[in-house]
Length: 87
Figure: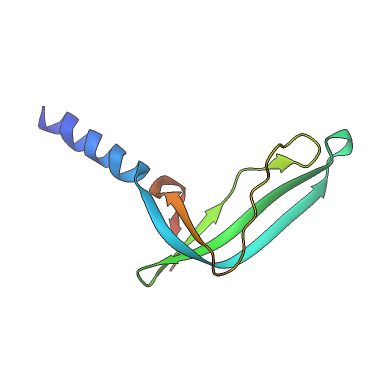
């Protein structure tokens, strides 16, 4: 039973959102024919003095509904499982 509890706690910890400030935004765009452009973002966020790298999922401009916008200095919430700690 303790092993199941520790696995459950680890899973919940990974899905707990982290409040962070966006430090850097890199937008990647490539032509995708009828779908428009394929867009993704690489973000560097900072929380409590620790920097993390986040890669967003790709979307197509002609298909996507509401598109996220990211700006330096904005605060955002990310699940821990999406964050990669920077050295």
